[in-house]
Length: 432
Ligand code: IMP
Image 1 (cartoon, rainbow, N blue to C red):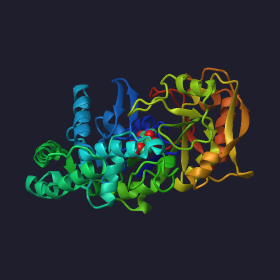
Image 2 (image 1 turned 60 degrees about the horizontal axis):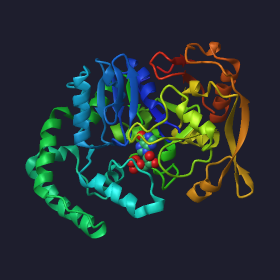
Image 3 (image 1 turned 45 degrees about the vertical axis):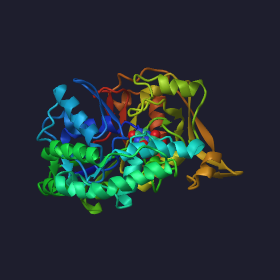
Image 4 (image 1 turned 135 degrees about the vertical axis):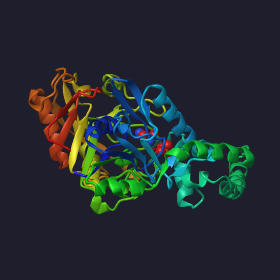
């Protein structure tokens, strides 16, 4: 099974990092193909707890090659700090991490514009992570971005910046009333990043193609979730990655063709969470919502910003939609243990919208804000599942819950996780 894509089926934070960490054992390359350091993956292993924002989760296996594809925007300061942190905690990075020469570079004006733009939007703010990723992708599409390759040549970098810095300063000063940036300082800082990142810079598409030609496995790690996708998600409360983190974006973001993808693993949490603003029909603002947030071994707070995640019941209308648009072949269902204490568990199977029932996700954000969830109620199991390792050992009601999700998604569940540790996983069917 040479190319596997792991995608999030909700609003991100589904546990893709822990699933990739498990699957990475059998892959040769583990790659990120989209987004930037707005993403945050938490991995817990024998070396401790790690939060990765740019480096793929395969880095903890010393024999894996980790790749940052052309589809990312990379904040050089963040990447260098992440490399330093990993190395200082005993994780080898050099010689195993490849950065695409075609990845976009996050520039100092991007986080500024991200925050200033959110202020301008006022009540309609997106609730971004504030990392500048949206403005950096806007510049990529607007042909006003820089690629990693551009950092490697001081002279041509200066030429690019001689246009970009005054151009961005005009926007900062005239639109936002903010302070301008110094061309000399930006040039010196980014030329320095270029020389420090140079050892990692690679023709990533060539590397991936060579690996596939040898018959080795490539694991492509999506960021965020399908409901945050620019095309498919709950626009305008979405992230701005181009290519998207949907499975279709994986081919573009790493440099392969769509026919080279063999398997799409959709990761879904056993309930729903969302960070940031925007519609979320099954959100719970009561004590059950608090229990979902605080009840698990790792409470629900954003890995990047630390913001409390909004929590709610599993939304099967949205989940069915995201399984289809990703062409999900198999499902990994995470955090089942968080539901252990609940007497009953609800699952949204239809929306009530303007007096009618619908089982499709409305394209209009305003309509989704009005959609009311219609729930199916399932009996809880009120037993600790965190020590279970075989599907047949789960309580009957927990198995029924998993099977119901499988029915509603129309894709088989291959893996269930019942805790953050590597071994707290229940394989149902093989993935690799
Ligand atoms: P941005 O990607 O920082 O522009 O934020 C846009 C939206 O995506 C906001 O609602 C963020 O909270 C959300 N978002 C971005 N990255 C992640 C992630 O890794 N997990 C969950 N939500 C995210």
